[in-house]
Amino acid sequence: SLQRVYNFSAGPAVLPAEVVRTVQEELPSYRRSGMSIMEISHRSSLFTDLQETAETDLRKLMQIPDNYDVLFLQGGGTLQFAMTAMNLAVKTKRVGFIDSGHWAQRAMEETALVKGTKAVVIASSKNQKYTQLPKIEPITGQFDYLHLTVNNTIEGTMYHQIPAELKKFPLVGDLSSIILGYNYQVTDFDLIYAGAQKNIGPAGLTVVILKHELLQNAPELPAMLSYPKQVQKHSALNTPPVFAIYVAGLVFKWLLAQGGVAAMQEKNEQKAQLLYAEIENSKLFKSPVAVEDRSLTNIPFVTGSAQLNQLFVAEAQAVGLLNLKGHRSVGGMRASLYNAMPLAGVKRLVEFMQEFERQHG
Ligand code: PMP
Image 1: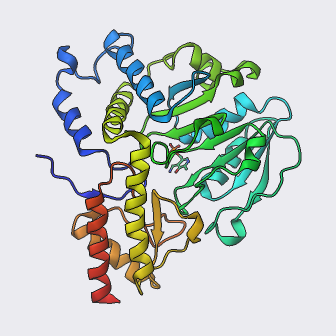
Image 2: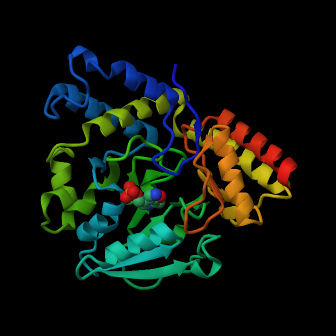
C-alpha cells in the first residue's frame, strides 16, 4: 500500500492516489512493451496514441471547440509569459495586464523583455497588497491582447467570472493553478496556458490551448518558441516530455471518471467552504483576502503572530499535514486544495486547526 500524507503544496502538488498507483503498476512494462513509458520512443504508436487520447480527453473535459488547438509544451508557465508576446504582440505591440499579484507581475516583466513589446498595466490592486482583485474600468487604447492571471496562486484570489470588459480584446489567461478545477468557458479566452504541476500532473509539461486563427499573424520564430510550428508538428517537433504527458493523460481519465470539471468544481467549492468557514469561525485564524475574491484552490490564512504561524506549520507537519507554509513573499500559511486533495484531507486540516486553537488560542 502507498504511504501517503496530505500534501497542501501549491506545486508540484498532490496527484490522485489512484493515478500514482496506476503509474506504479504500469511502470516496468507499459502496455506489455517490455519497456517503461520513460523508455519508449516518442515516435512509436504507443506514445502517439497516448498523446492523442490525452488531447481528446482534455478536449472533452474543457469542451474545447474545434477551432482551438491544444499544445503540450515545455518551459512552464514562465516560458508562456514571453512566448505569448513573441507570437501575438505583432500589430500594436502593446499588451494590457491586469496586475493582480506576483505571477501577473512576472508575466509583465517577461513580456516587457520581448523586444519591441510594451507591457501596460490597465488595472492593479497593488495598493491593496493584492488582497483583492483589481477593479476593471472601461479599457481605452489599442492592445494586441490582454493578459489575466485567473487564479493568483500566492495571494489566494481568483476571478469567479471573467470580466466582460476584458472580452473586448483578445484575452490570454494564465490558468496554471485553477485549470480543470473550475468551469471556465474556453471561449472566453483566445489563449489559455497552464503549467501541469498543480492541477494536471508532473512538472515539465505546459498545456496551451489557443484559437487557431491567432496563428495567422505570428512572425517567423525559432521552432520551439513558435505556436504555428508547434501546432504543425503536434507538439512533437522535438522530444516531448513523454512521462509528464503520460501522467497527465491518467489524470484526465481520472477526472472524467469523477464526473468532469463541473463535478470537480462542486467538490472544490465544498472543500474551500469547509476551510473558509473554519477561518471565519475561529478567533485565532484570519483570511487576508476579500471575501468575494477568494480562491477555491489556494487559501492563505494567518494567526496574529509569526511565531504561532511557524509553530502551526511545524506541528501540522508532525501529524502528516504537509507544506502549509505560505509563500515567502506573504508569510503565514497557505493550503492548496487542488482537484486531487480529498475532502478527508481538508476535514483533517480543520480538525487540526481547532485542536491548535484550543491549545494556543
Ligand atoms: N503562473 C502561476 C499562476 C503560477 O502559480 C506559477 C507557478 N507557481 C507560474 C505561473 C509559473 O509556473 P512555472 O513554474 O510552470 O513556470
